Length: 165
Image 1: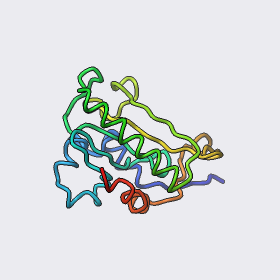
Image 2 (image 1 turned 135 degrees about the vertical axis):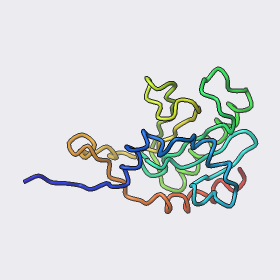
Image 3 (image 1 turned 30 degrees about the vertical axis):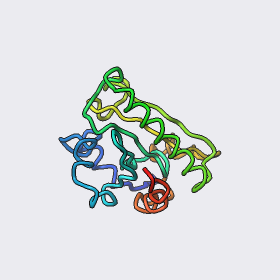
């Protein structure tokens, strides 16, 4: 007998080629205005960059930091953009350690499509919280990641921690 685990939310990712549509989410979502931040899971806005939850997370709390400016190459980032991205990463690490007891973190950028960037034209930093034992058999055997929390709940827990941002 074949077992199935349904994850219909993944179809938006598959059909959208990874970004859920034709536009640039890193340009489109913040441009919708602060009144749409909760619906867009945008956690914080800085002067040059912003923080949002990944709509297709590897783990609960998987977020991204991106500049408002549409730039695809690391060398094109201004010093202020880099500094603010790292400051937001520090805030996120502290928030996730305190809020969900994360044991560690993966931080990284996929620079270019061949490096795995789903949205290669707008640079962004991934921050993935990790816990001991969070890699189980499902991604390997079932080719499915099991997430124990809804995105909206993760947003509600983390948003207050970015209130100053």
